[in-house]
Length: 255
Image (cartoon, rainbow, N blue to C red):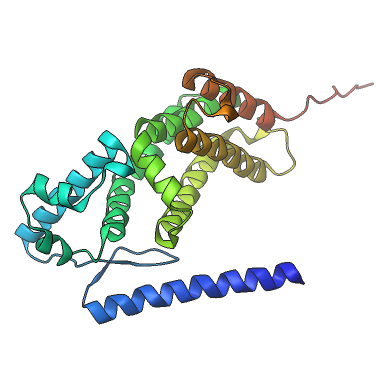
């Protein structure tokens, strides 16, 4: 009963967060851009070509700041200085730095997710068995996510506190998990579980937990005991392959 009350309270809190965001948008006159299931992002949508181009420059500058120095390096003054705009021009479009981060996250995933899906499908299509497909599919995920370490780290770490970032992250995870399942279910006969889709979902969760921990806490964190990235991810893929294959089955004796 206590757990049900807790879930209801969380649900109500999430609903209040959504309402607050939409009301803020209505009162400020900012247009909602993009579509998210848990919360929409309020910032002013540019209509003119020059305004769209300046928005793109702002987002690119913010992305480069995070990529170069982590989330801590992202400053409004640094972004507007880089693109030659005033601070006032920034606030005419974004209510605060967090709204900027929301827009950067959307832009990043709009660019990244089609690439990830295409690569997963292309690389697993050449695989001859489950082991090869697991290595190929998770290799694509690891390569793309860790290849943008600081941006991925920023979204993951801040999503703990921000419902908009968290909602977008959940959508992205669902899309990646679905792409992974579509690719690996081509080898369902080799998956040693009664429910192959469930096994793939669990495998994705294991992958996500390891990668998130590595990106957020870094290579020197005691959780990983100084294990190098290449070793950690190589062992992760081996573990996922063994998990998906399941326990060895006793051969059936025929008479």
